[in-house]
Length: 208
Image (cartoon, rainbow, N blue to C red; front, side, top):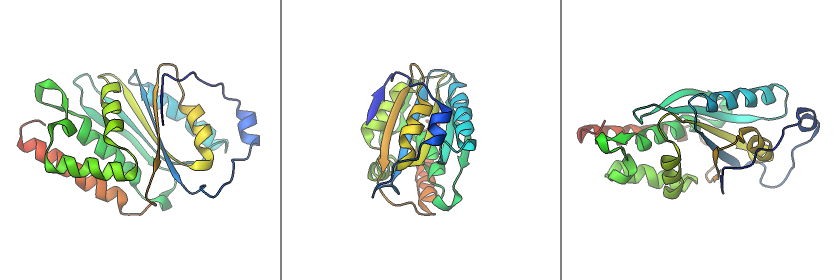
């Protein structure tokens, strides 16, 4: 599900704290929400508001990451937090994947996954199996312009609505995807290895 330029919903912390998250058979599902913001500081500011909700027990995050796209168009990792260590390091692998795929290749600024190559194809296919497909990557690439910031959040299904409200900001681009496989401790390392292979492949081509 994708929501472009959503209308922010007002947050009432007292109401959020008093509400109990819904319970269903799919409660253990892991949900990925990505917010893309026009300013370099926006993602970090949104994360601070989420951390406040976490302290107030109005939200329970699994993992978060903040990425920044600098003036040259290169994507940089600014902060990664695993709030629930037992869930593994998937957030690290997701962040590394986006950095390797969405940084420019040469002066044209072409995203890596459009430039092709075996490592790129394997990483894109793996991300698609996880729930983040090629069209999602293309949406992120087009929305994340130089000077923008990205907030990646992983959360269990009962907390999705509260997280969606928390990352809503005027002019933001929001992606919401369900992570398909169960969490494993080595899943993050797997995606990091693939991301490093992509960077190595394009370094050989002189693009990095």
